[in-house]
Image: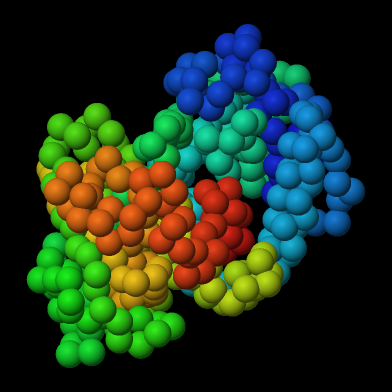
Length: 349
């Protein structure tokens, strides 16, 4: 593909250079950095022949599957609503950076900042290759490492959970109470927890900042009133896109991967936040402010972020959980990775 040809393309960070360093991680991006790329791009929205990207055979196969998936999705018409990458010209979309040669600008979206190497998606004209370009903006969140990868799966106080007796504030629910679930009807809550995140912690660990889904942001009545959840809390997404990608009618997507800076935003105005957890006998889909979301699953959570006394109570309910969080059981639905969610968002843009 030549620069100036319009479409949607994917390249690998292995094909890039940042300030003279080949395959530099996207976390090293800085305004004013010199960036360039070489090789061939994979077109994912048309019939172009697939071209192998740089890297080991196993990584190449992963990229090959990603490109096939993206091509299938991006070639489909229609929209389920609510999913889009921000297209405002006065802002850099989340998980993106902008480069220029002084004559034209190009926005690249990082499909998975934590991958090695990450994939970069370009919608529109390809930036000129083998050319020094300058980074003018970047909004790429730092990759998390270690236990922080698990994050937190939580609601916030005031969230109304559907129960057999009607909506109930999440902070008022106690072990022994029942909540309504998509798969099993009314089920008992086995454990609840709550943990306050101070402003200092949110400043030091920005990936813990809550995500606000504006009222109706994912469709009529979805949610009913703003819904504020932890960034790793997963929401149920259903429809043609889920079927096209996974041959499954429903998948779970982390709130942070739905951020579009319009209807779903990272809430930077909250000075502190309290996160509330609900655990049932198995992973469930529950309704929060009318929107279908997940209950707590230990495998997707950093247990170090759970209050020590409440963590001890959790470990008594599910012995061996600390060594193997999947002793609790599997997920209610397939969890999408950030790169899979990014491709789905782009399809509706």
